[in-house]
Each structure stands twice: as C-alpha cells, then as structure tokens.
Length: 408
Image 1 (cartoon, rainbow, N blue to C red):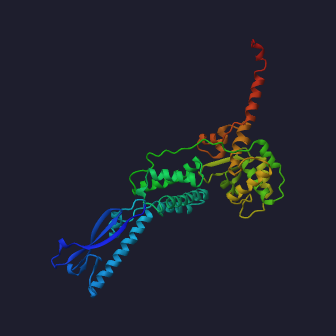
Image 2: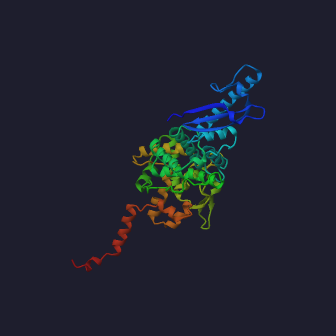
C-alpha cells in the first residue's frame, strides 16, 4: 500500500506573541494520521502566504526564514525515509520525534545481530568455532533478505519484533531456501539468542518468543555400513586429493573426531595413557568438553603415512570442510554408495558401525565422543540389522533344546 506523506507549514494566528508575531508550525500527515509541532521560529502574519507555506517578499529576513523552512522540509523528509527503512510500522509521531530528537534511535535487530556475530568472530579459536560464527553470519544474512523481501525495510526496531515476525521469518526460510524443519529451528534458535541479549539489556520488555514453540523432527542420520566403509577403505584413487580426503574421513570413522578437532590436531594430542598404549586426547572446540580415544591401528597407519610431510606440526592434510564435503560426494559416487556423504557422517559411523554394533557400551562411546549427556550419544546410536542378527544367533544357541519341551 502506497503511503500518503505530506508536510505543511502554517502559522498559529490565535497564539500571537507580545511582539505581534505568530509562531511557525509544521504539520506531518501520514496515511491520514496528523501530528503537529512548533518549529521555534516566528513571522509577521501579514508577511505569511498560507497557500505556499512560506514568507512573502524578497527581503533578507524573508529569504533567511524561507531557507530555514526548506532545510526543515528536507530534514523531516530524510527522517521519514530513515524510519521507513528500519521499522515495519511508520507513524507521523515517529517521524516528528526523530526530527525533534525527542526519541533516540531504537536498538535495531540487525545492528545488534551483527555486533553479536562480530563478538563471535574475534573469539574464533578460543571459545568459539569458525562454524558457529559462520552460522550466525548466515542467519544475519537471511534476516536481512527476509526483511527486504517481506517488509521492504533494511532493519527493524527490536521493540517491533512480534510473534508474527517470527512466523513470517520461519515461512521465508522454508519457502525461499527450502530449509527443513530442523534447519529452520536452528535459525530460529540463533535469532532467539540475540533477542535474549536485547531483553537482558533492557532494550525490550516483552519476549516475542513467549508463545513460540520450537519444533524438531526425528531424522535418520547417515552412517556407513561395514561393507560401505570397507569399499571406501579398499578403493584405489588415481587423484591425490581424493585419496587424502578418503584418508582423513577414514581417520574420523575410527576415532569419532569432528572436523574441527581433526583440523586442530597436532602431535601434542597423541599421548601414552595408563595402559601404555597411545590415545588421542584433547578438548572439543565446539563444547570445550574433554575427549579421550584409544588410537586404533587404522588411524595410527594414516598418521604414519603423513608424518613429517606437513607444515606447522599438522598431522593430516586438512582442507576446508566445504571442500571436504564436496570431494566426499565424489568418493560416494565412485564407490557406488547411494548416500549423502559428509564429513560428519564419519562421526556417526564411529558411533554406530565401529563401536556400538561391535559391543562397545554406550557409556564408553559417549565418553570418547566428548558428550556430557548420554542422550546426545543416543542420537548417534543405531542398532544395525547385523547386530540384531548376531545377538539373536547367540540367543538361539542358548535356547537350543527348549523347543523339545513345546507340545505342538
């Protein structure tokens, strides 16, 4: 809907001052709403032209006052544009307040979001992972696109964010970017974090998330079966980059380490433990929780393969996670594996195929993965058909002979 924005200058004849002059007033009209206020200047009523809203004549005082009125008009118009750019609801009163400086500019969503994202950026490698920073930066970008698309504004006052704004953003993520329910929820949770910062600082008093419910759907997380894992391990790659990515991926399949933890791994992470065997020890970048994983033969061989060939004490030829995932898709195609292969799939494979299905307790797996809550480990855990078959065969052996006691 097109806005009807008008500015009118007039004089208040019924409030003449002792010197006989009348105060000059401004009237802002926006979509039928009117607000008016004094411009803190005065003029002789006989010299005022009500049709043009200006002072008549070409005297120096007349030209000076008319120039001042032109500046006022330009300034009010500029404030109208600024308010329109940052707020969903624009009123004549907001424009007046902005012009008079009565109300300081409200804290805005993107401004606060970008400040928070920047604070994450400077903490990368300390308490924050690069992945976390990038997720918040991506959320800010999605919010900017959403507000431009939905409301044609560049930012919004924190006080104007309501349940409708949250719902519209959720729909935007699903329709414009094809986000799944769980991915959409992650975006909404990051927005919630910034809203809480605003609430804790007293910039807003009502929580727009008060009646908002986060929804997640149970998903089957991809992992490799033993046969698929062996097919990648045995494959001979003619391209060196694919061979290296395969090695790093297999390393994670037998250690359960996340990408960032493999990326940061150095000689100092390999230590001799109480049982005099080698373990990988460290703290997860994502959570800061300690992990301890016995170094099995396969990852040990991979470390030996690259020992002394890499700079800065690096143990494996790491590349970016994005490139890693792109090359893993190539590897999946070459090995005829009909799954979306990502680096994180290695962590699932460690939890499911390499450990739990081989009888390792979920408590031990949880400790190796660096989880603080065993419920998190249960998300990774999969009871494979092979495990069920093996356990039922053991049970069948124990029940052997009991069938003779059943009278058919």
